[in-house]
Every structure is written in structure tokens, then in C-alpha cells.
Image 1 (spheres, rainbow, N blue to C red):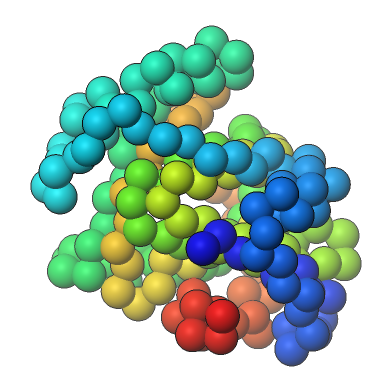
Image 2: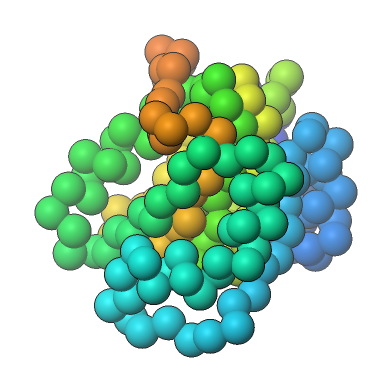
Length: 185
């Protein structure tokens, strides 16, 4: 189940939860975030490689590439046994912005985006089938949990791919982690 919780940015104990997909889309649309569902025409094997994943969603990817002038596409896959899961998690947990807008499609598993917009924090639990597009220069962080299990297609308008500008803020430390958030649903 996809979920959205909107918090005051200084009171992580007071959030308003949304679980209806249309309500999530509306709330995120109010801050310029695009959120939608995708489907695949084929089943993927558990050990599907990047080419297989991209092939399964080729028509949707091509449509987005044409609409948004994406220059590069990749697949990020992390499992609980990944040797660098902690390194990746710490990197993504630090609040940052991108000069480019960020687009992620969850092929499998789930992850939690935190968007810090104005005086609010929007916690967006993305699950299999969810596509989220975060506008350029939107402060945010991402938590995949202590034992991540997800596969995401990432699309970029630059050939460089993922490039973050870290804010130095410690705000992520006061909000629930992915594991705490999911346990509280």
C-alpha cells in the first residue's frame, strides 16, 4: 500500500496520513510532485538483470524519454544481502537536492521518500508500481530501510545520472526511519 504522511517540519510526531491513491496524488500534485502507477506486460524473474527490467517497461520508458528528454536510464537493485547496503543507505539519508528533477519507478519492493517543502515534510511510501517525479531543487532524502529490498528504474535528463547537492541539514535524523514508518502503518 502506498502512503503519504504530511508533517510539520519541526514536529515529526504530528503527521496526517493518506492511503487513498487519488488523495496521495492530489496532495503531492499541490507541491509539483508527479505520482502515478505503472504496470508491466510481463513477469520478471527474481534475478532479472538491468536489461530484462528495462525491456519489461520499454514502452513506458520510451514514452517518458520522449516527453521529458531523458538522456540516461538505469536500474538500482538492492537486497538485504548487498555488501554495500549501509553505505548506500547513509548516502541517500542525507538531505539533498538535484539540479535535475528526480524520477523513480518501483519495479519491486518499496522505499520512503521524504520531501522537505516549505515548513512541511512529506513522507511518501513508494511500492511496486509507483512512479514518483520530484521537481528539481526540492530538498529531500530517501530511506530504503536497514534491510532493503527494491528494484527501481531511474531516469535522468543528464548523461551524468544521479548527482546530489547535500544541504548539510540534520533534519532526517528527527523523522521516523523507513522501518519505524512501516511498522506504524
